[in-house]
Image 1 (cartoon, rainbow, N blue to C red):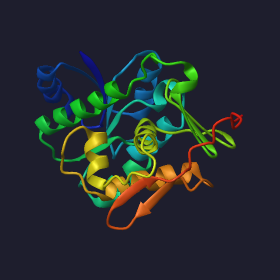
Image 2: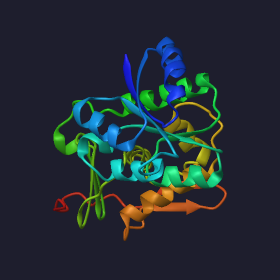
Image 3: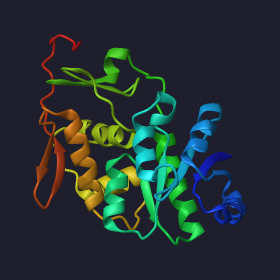
Image 4: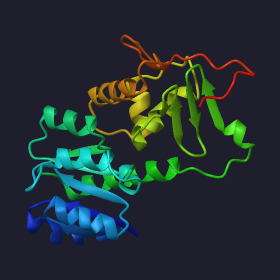
Length: 243
């Protein structure tokens, strides 16, 4: 049973949605204000959030931003944003702030269930497991960058690089095969776990966000009309560890 927290000021939405999502082994809890959501998150564990873009106290985009920059226990929680009109601007802003997916209102409950299943499946598959090799073999080391796949940590010359779960998975996907060009469709299908009606601009936004966090390293290379690849050279054997 997956526990979901719905944050939406439409009180009439929670009841029918709770009944429908129960068919898919989801337990839905609901609040109407960000302050109430903060209180619930502080005391309880949830597997994902369904977050409306328009809320009292602060809008859903600001709430998403605060979650992603807040306590460790909340930072990586999967977030599905609901946008009132499905406008491109709303989708772009939500993804830039760290949302894992979006769904425009009005929506079909079955599509919501499918997208939640995809987000949670991706999170489950990405969960770290005990390495079968020595700890040193669990690190991907490049000039100016280290990726610790056991701790799910990324370090640059200036220290720890704070990434969302989706940003980390994108970086790991590219860095495991340096120089390989991944198309936008490759990235969408790998990260989303299924083909969906997602515009390729979503990938561009995600790459741009990741690229900014990795600056000044030129780690991600864009190949026009082809896709993206990881461009940092592998660190020479015997080079010192980064601090």
